[in-house]
Image 1: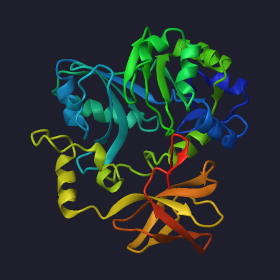
Image 2 (image 1 turned 180 degrees about the vertical axis):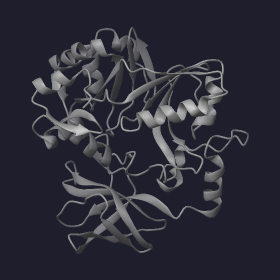
Image 3 (image 1 turned 90 degrees about the horizontal axis):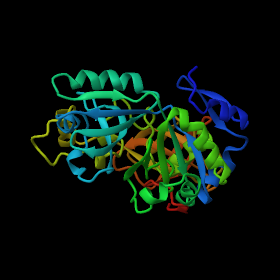
Image 4 (image 1 turned 180 degrees about the horizontal axis):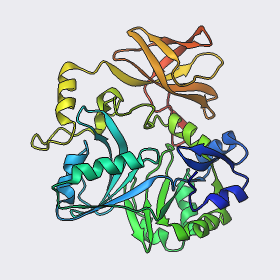
Length: 358
């Protein structure tokens, strides 16, 4: 199995190590629920070094990204600005979801998912043929996500100089400090930073954050936090066969510029005209129990299935994201252990910035 530069630090901290898409990663350090609350109420940090950073450089970098992804990088005008998008195949299915950061028109940085890295890079390289652009995976970078209401304050305390360059940084923007690339982004529904840094500096930075009281958190809490925040997970809410229009990600698709023929556009426009059958909704269980992935959901409009289910530590209830027929509303039933159990259909997110919204 592959190891991140922080592997030893996880083992030393008593991390329960599990196989996560070929990477040996910490599921938790004792209590997943405690780690979840830690991020919602204070601050925690995650090793996300298994994710891959890819730099795009060259005179046609912008033109290429306008073809490669469904959102339009032309929106990015200021250095460090970030954009969330899906990268699609010809059929309009999602190859991956990603964030792209703007440096200038010839220089962009992208962060892609761990489990799809090889597939993504092969796809990107194939699409890049004929463009004057170099595609540079930065495999020597580590990535630490510091998240929670007190995250920024703690990062300023731990790493000298960060406050000077990031003090005024708005959400979905980034800045550089020496070898650090610091983005005000995350996957928890809380404020914070995602820090990309040389792998040789990772352990030292992790320890400096621990010294100011930032607690390490595992992938278990990362999943319950992102699900409460209503954030999609690649391979669950979307995949090669599910389009953004069927995954409640229409907001990430930009069709404004009719001349911008990005990969998958024709298929999306055809689906848009026909109308997507399914969408992603939130579910909250009325009674006791835990909702699990792939359980059957029966709504007022037909059948669907749970894409991500968990117990919400913040709400004290079982919640889920589910793919259901469009127009599903009100109460539905989930098949749990051969019994039909009642749940309420809601619009995600369930929780943002510590507040329950449903």
